[in-house]
Image (cartoon, rainbow, N blue to C red; front, top):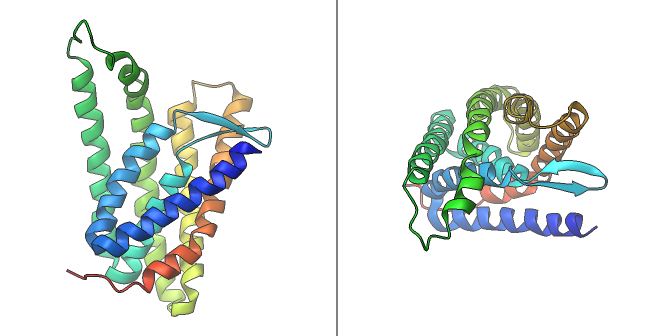
Length: 226
């Protein structure tokens, strides 16, 4: 029960920080959020937790906010800006992987306390990053395309929830399948892998649905458009 209650608080904190970031920094804040969320989600995903008897990974909440961000960019600034944010997150993830792998190759000093903790996290990152890069690249651009298509079919302001949830539910299914296959395909027994895949997708879907009011709130913010 603790993980569930703490998870609810965790989701609320993530959404609140997202809104603050956009309100304070406008469109530039959304790009910054994509970069930070991409890195933090890939760090959190190495940790698994038990919730209601199921095994699931962390990182789903933070990663889900990336879809929220690109949908908001698409809604207010257009498809071109949403795609630019996707490319920005893609670059940030590659940059993090390269820089941290090089950092780990330095010989640590005798009094060093950081090498082993960093190694435990970032030595696992290349496989996670590969799965994430493939899943991110495919699903995020798919999300942008579907959202743009849905805007033509459901253009009304009050139909935002349809555009958001349809595009996100489809793209996150693709994302979860690609990521879990690459990142965890050889790490866990089949039964555990299926649990992680299903719980990952269901959790992402629930978070995305819960984010719909946040998207409405953010759309109505008056921010610096420069």
